[in-house]
Length: 166
Image (cartoon, rainbow, N blue to C red; front, side):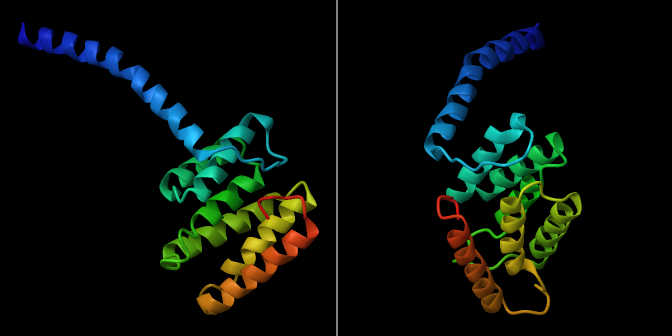
């Protein structure tokens, strides 16, 4: 009898607090703001991809990584999902550089993106700009890689002056 009461109580709580989870998800999305980052990925994953980019801007790296991973699973040919995963692994470069494990994982993600092949020049440019940071991570100092990435991003702003993300 006690287990039956407990079971009923559990179901009641589940129904009471389920809407809270939905409301929290909506609040989180609203807090992140709206990002516009066009890709050639399946339109079904576009909103989710942009949510991942918004998470990057909010330093939500753990959740952002999950989002980009989910996008890649839904659309394995979405090269920008691999780019998103790799940029997410940068973390907060003002506090500490990525770990060796994250450097390796990011480089592998970028290699995967290159192997699939970007459908647009803009996407190739984004992948190559980020590659400037991760290339030769085991041989080149973090300062030199940051400088290379900064230069690559500066070129992006000239090539795509209307691209807010650049």
